[in-house]
Amino acid sequence: MKFRISLLCTLTLLSVSSVLRAQEVAEVTLTADKVQFLYDKKEFTVKPGQKVKVTLVNPADSVTRQPHNFLIVKPGKKDVVGMAANAGMADPAFLTTKQAVPESPEILHHTKLVQPGEQDTIEFTAPEEPGDYPYLCTYPGHWAIMNGVMKVAP
Ligand SMILES: [Cu+2]
Image (tube, rainbow, N blue to C red; front, side, top):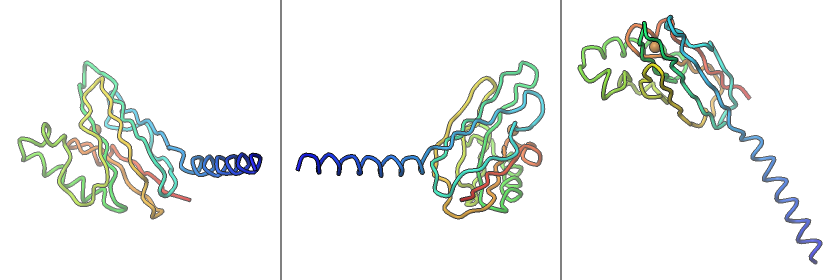
């Protein structure tokens, strides 16, 4: 009887650990360029429904002193969100309270506006739907070149 219970426990632990492996967190660090408006990665890949941890690092630079952020948006919506960011400049709170994040239903997740020498980490669950999910920096004027793609693929 004791043997059977311990076997059952072992089997349960084994299945739990294989589930955990499948749900391994995808940890991604994006570092902004010190001078140009660029991330150091143009793409990264995660699995559908996977837990994802993204850290945006903004290296200090005494010359540019440039803040950046990181937004993931729905497939095909990079330009719409980028244009909304350009329009956001009319709002005095855009670069402060709003962290340069425009109001748009196309935005899935975002960091705060990361100042030089700082970093921010966000955690989210990847979409279940495979596809190319654009990411971009919505500090005005950056998004057209400061962007990339999070690929969701099984
Ligand atoms: Cu930027």
